[in-house]
Image (cartoon, rainbow, N blue to C red; front, side, top):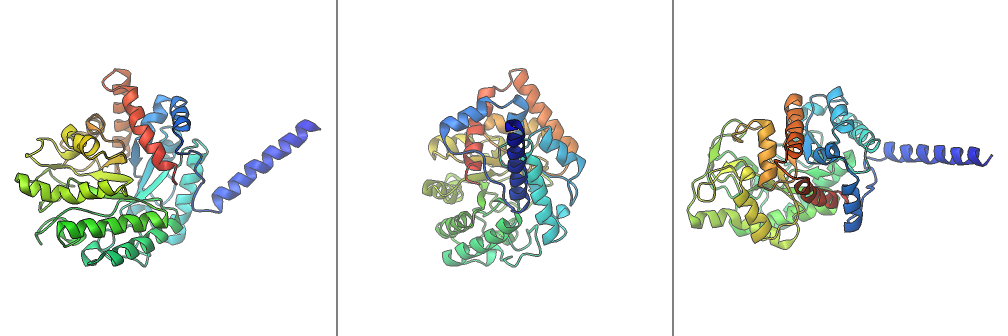
Length: 364
């Protein structure tokens, strides 16, 4: 009889947990910021689980397809990047996100990042949302904080917990690739308005990702298609870097996205793969948050996707985005795994990134 009661209690707990998962857009975090607990989590992870947590991937359909199921259940990915191809309407995407989280929690106690580029203006993934103001139309901190807070609330409602925004790129040319998407102000104004947006998103319960460090500036080519180079003097470089530096000093930046921009004044490699730029972030500016690459399938990386993932990790990145192609995502995973097995990169290096990732996820 005692065994029967215990079995019934277990069923009640499992059913209750399932109801909790399916009745809410958020799943409860099963990790904490406690350093000892995080270390225990890391020590208990397999190599596949560790590598998977470094990846943020996309998938092709508005439903759970075989590829994303495999990436969650067999490769333990850390996050999903939603694009327009995944979205039909509010009900559909809310259900899809809930199903992604349920599938993840069935395999791992570590929450899944559900991320998107919902900047407003021309860069949106959820057209049904009401707050679609572009950054270029925001001219004060009050409006910036309000826009981010309302937008963050809409994202939170459907289950998105990370937004790849706001932008702190300093752009002065109307012909620049990023002109329609950025604040049009002085570096100090950009810093003030960006900080307000960071706070707005955080207050709404969504993790903001500051981008695109160190800034695309006035480049005109689309970095999704081709390599991009920005020639700057020492003075101009300081101006471009100043918003990022000052924002990091405030402590309001939980995560930052790197740009595949070559700035010869600093390095001949794109910033995403530049150990020098990562040294600036970690050693000079003391940034302790998560460094996320821009999409490694972009034409401006200069590497194959597998090598790009490895080179970004070697340089100092933490999470690696591969959005569009299933085969390239799997290739990146396998390239990283092989590199660890063969000693090209140490498991201790993986653990450094995992500590930051798990600390970030503890706040979900």
